[in-house]
Amino acid sequence: MQKDKIVNSHGNNLKNNRLMLVYCVMAALTAVLLGAAFVVAPDRIVMEINKSYSAILEVLPVVAVSILAATAITALISPQFIAKWAGDNSRITGVLIASAAGALIPCEPMLGLPMILGIARGGAGIGFIVALLTSSKLFSFMRIPDYFAFLNFQLAMVFLACTLAMPFLSGLLARFYAGHIYWKDNENTTDERPGSVISCRKQ
Image (cartoon, rainbow, N blue to C red; front, side, top):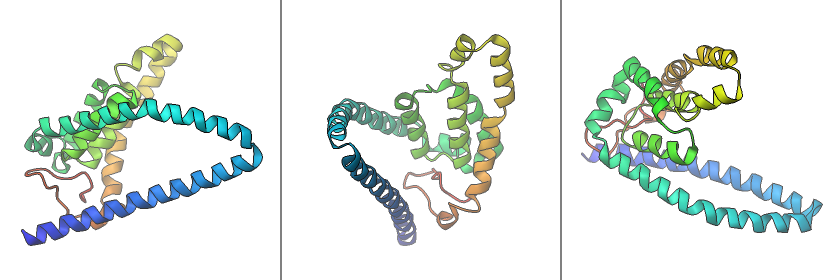
């Protein structure tokens, strides 16, 4: 038990360190861009910052609702169900299921991503999540009608036929890379929820 706690703590620290690195890089780039904007166009940047402030106030409630939705999905889906059909042990079957299920997920980020986040937090494998993301972006039931509305029928059909295998292939590729590069230092890390396997476990 003590060993599991140490391993979980180590995995959480690695994740937090990576997130902090990403945030620091983004903050540094933003500071450089803002500094350049104040030098080149000081009046305009003040006006744009005021607009951004209003946009942030509009987006924050949506983000809060999305996080709550992801939390609810995590609680509703059984860890055993996720481990069986979407976990790392589901292998090719899980990737196939995700490739088909992605069409049922809304392509809008504020609607679809909380659902996928909830499934990921429930213990879905990296291959399942990548296939689900790819499928939802390409073949969402909300997006396919747009293809036929804005493209001609023949072009839309050719596009769909050529990209049909992309979710499955991207899921397999994610499983391959997960076992060799990014997730190597977390190969023994398990989720705190009984019966679940976190998405960054080595294949």
